[in-house]
Length: 96
Image (tube, rainbow, N blue to C red; front, side, top):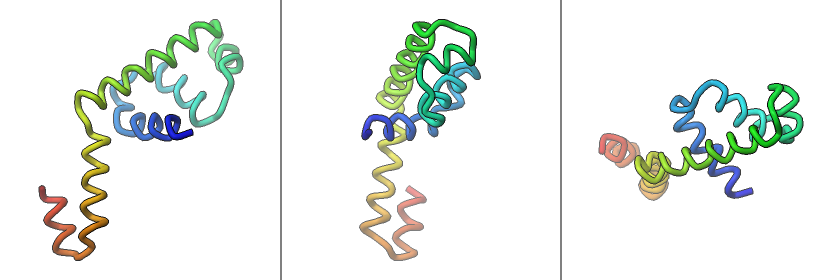
């Protein structure tokens, strides 16, 4: 479950870097909770093709996060904001 939530967060950040087909597969599997079989039927491709695409998408998302670290940076900003709730502190953190 934790991995699923993490991948959904990464998808929100890096979605634009995926093709439309990759976005459709990811959303069908992770958002709509469709099985590989259901996705393969909807897109008229083999179940193996869907599985390979999802594995490829997951690898890409993890690689982009490893290289760019936008998710990590977002988490660090939220932690700083949580620890410093004054308006001035939040403004200063966001400016950084």
